[in-house]
Image 1 (cartoon, rainbow, N blue to C red):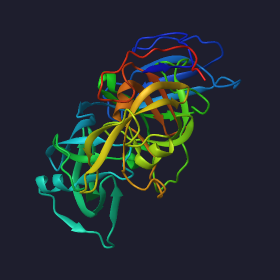
Image 2 (cartoon, helix red, strand yellow):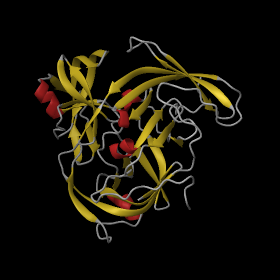
Image 3 (cartoon, one colour):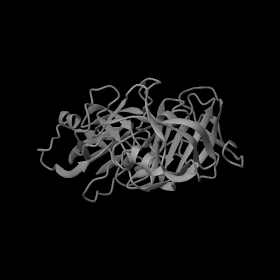
Image 4 (cartoon, rainbow, N blue to C red):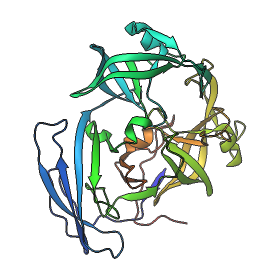
Length: 361
């Protein structure tokens, strides 16, 4: 596998904060906000402006930093429901935060049916909704009381997962996935239009616009190129690995009968049905200015990708592990830099990636 990036690193700094001087600059002040933190520390950075904009003051308020862990490539943080300790899965692919039905049973939560029957649709079929009134939900010092939450899902997720925190929550802030340092950070920017928010590498970060969906269906959907063809990919931190829908893979020239394709067993999701899955060779994937050559990606018959809010590709936790990613909901774009290692997980050990200054055609 060969991975290439378009931009070269102009300057580096440690995480404590150093002044960057990168040509025409705007001031970005990174502040750890006291909402969830006892200390308030200001870090002044100078970052390159986008275009010939006049200098402006941009403040990036850090709301909180969560220590996270990976279990079976699920991004988890410790939390509590009604005083009982649980694992909280961080899932940008879920439009609504919810409680797995197995966890509701384990926690002894009193639930009731919704007034109008609703079904959740996803990988593995359908699952009906119940609803529960949580007396208290807590992550670190952040607490929410009397929260009505849906219950759904037909599979036990393991790892004591008792809650899935979805994009309805994350869409309210800018979220940084720094899994190399076992951290997820929440930010609130102020006066940052036209300013790169990739404070750790402002000259080196890739940028990619987030497609507009609608406010009632919060999703992080990106336009990527696979084998030279445009594909809509949803950033899904709840997916352990990136995966293509089977019909999308066929459109890109890869089927279960393609030479080099290997069956990798069954996959499960929100529904009760296990689905066949494969992994196959793809010539190239381009995400922003980053090109991954001669890679392998899983594919499965997940759902009808022509249905509303179902997308041909999921960019999963493997992508987040290989990158440092800031989902800037405030600007409707993501920023990301490459950490190293395989972008897409596969069966055979990957070749060491080669990084060059400009992607080849």
